[in-house]
Length: 464
Image (tube, rainbow, N blue to C red; front, side):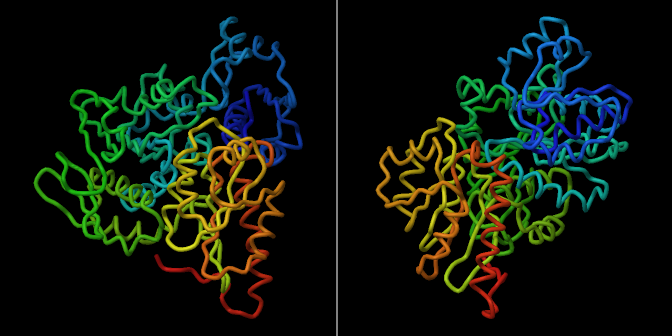
């Protein structure tokens, strides 16, 4: 139910088709909207597509439903299935069932923000000890794409959304090493309140066993909300060395890890190629997990210094003589855009706006008023609420990203950072935040190519 746009549904369908199952894919989106995913499906006479709608009969006459994690718990179709005794599961649940007999060497990363970068950093570090290490989950790599690659004692790193963790509750499963990056207001268009949202997150550590490890951000309110299970080793990460127990910390421009008896220097922050305070937290989290696993500081430093970030997350796109451009399309909440804005000094031109999730805007507005020199907005329900809530900056609103980028490229300001950090979801104008980010990158590179003809500055990156 729900082919989705991030690869999870395609992975699930291909997994069951490869095992001889008859598969029905049902999705409210049309064939045109789902074409990129449909093109990746295995050709099979056992595959049937129901697109642009759902049929109640499909939810009654089936053995198993794999529910897209984003499908709400009150779906009438899921209700019909349960009333008829049909099993309802998620991709991550089936994955855990399939690999549980092979390995318990599983690392889980969750949080409102930072989980993709933290999981990817940890993967980059861990492959040095486990050459066959695997990464998947909410990071746009379907767990079904890696399930057959899992061997005995394989190292598996999973980025886990709250939706996926909610699907694990019935299995009473938590990963051996769990990392909780932070907890912020989000997904209130799915959950009734923050309490319900947090409850799903607790599956990350709720079922951990003696000797497992839970690593939590001690500078975030989540640290006081998390209740580790008895005999689980609690570690922390954050700024400052004034804390009890084991964990990583930042002091005088250097990252350290403190164990039971010794404190190790991991690396200097000058060797980190990721802008922003929030990315320092991501490095601290990954470093703590790596030290727990016995990875040497030098190996952590080597991996982190080579890591240049993920697409759509403060992704450096390019520069001209006037401006440097960053793609932060994955910032789908006001809080994420606040973190992005705080990552830069000097003049900032911000491109923001999109579909509303109903989240608080006060901090976003305050930071825009303080740090943004020029504001460009994309049309959307979130944008309309934003402009009514106390913006003191002049702004222009555009009905397409093409028009917004063209306008920004024509500005005459010098030495400016152009940041695309929407702060809202992409619904309506784009398929998802990744399509939105890809489009921004393509438009900017086209503009840069035109502007920089013969200048020799195209593609040169600043050192942070």
